[in-house]
Length: 120
Image 1 (cartoon, rainbow, N blue to C red):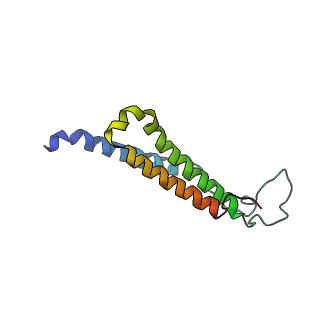
Image 2: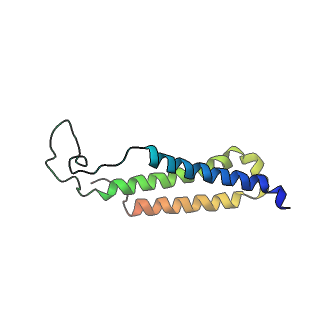
Image 3: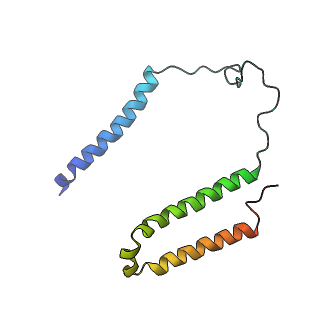
């Protein structure tokens, strides 16, 4: 029984050995890191940095991007179901998809109610 899985075990070993070997070889042959204050300063057209780069970031941009990704991924999950709608209609998936759409609608209603997408 073990002989049936021998090729998979060998393949797994080769995958791990290749990854470890590539990392070891690059650390041996690659350039070594040198640390200096000048090297880590940002370079912008030869002009020295005048202000702090760690400014506060507006949370609305992050929220908008996160909500866009969320609804985009949920839409992607609907596309395969919509493609095979006639075939899947008879398998009893309609209640599950309707439940999914209701949850999507509730989430969108909550987002609109809390004004998460409004700019100031």
